[in-house]
Image (cartoon, rainbow, N blue to C red; front, side, top):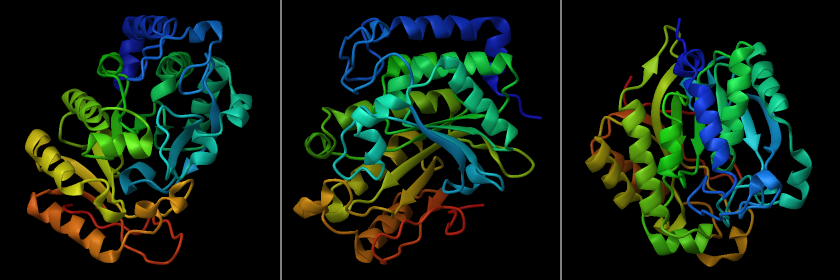
Length: 327
């Protein structure tokens, strides 16, 4: 039976030390690369529009992730409100960019721990932290509380990858599965469409740290459920705004073509994207096929591909529309 490594950290007292270190970083917030320096412990609002308490927009067994995360009973996803990016095409903009409403969804650390335990009791295969970057100290504190109450599920860190390497180092042994996006290869594009500077450099450094912690190989149980590893997601954008060739080449060159990648076709022009010329349509099948050719070109062996679907506003998931590169 797989026992997450955070249980060992709890038993040795190391997890409590990490809680204290991360919590102290909120006094002059340096939790993400924005480094806004406000005192969130005193209730000041950071650039991510968040204060001290975590914001939970919703939580549920989720069946739209890659198959070894979803399994038969779902990933236990917790959707955190607000975000340190401002993507103009964000598909979850109602919770990521609606801070006046989201502030009403603050919860205590005990409540967040209870949510994790509720998802475990419902039979979920993991705890999926969706957009966790700006609440890492709060999440780790809740994991500490929940571990003492019996939490034993793998923890999935589902992130935009605009993460601090220093903070990620403090997550070593706490996070079992890293699920980062790699959005752009061009710094100016990252600022234009997500309003943050140096996205490619910061995201690549973050992903390399995630890779250092868990390596290339995915660890599965006897039922094919993922217990440990790294999956890099890449969302294909219209007009090659994502810079897919450079992105995939970097992954292959730096991390190896045996790393697991997940190629996503689910883009559609939501949020502010409909009024932006280069983003105001879905991707074309020819654009998507070109990216899939790059997957072959760079020799990737492991991963998943969302099938292309031209129907307007169709959002494919991985539950039954998936093509693994290699079994």
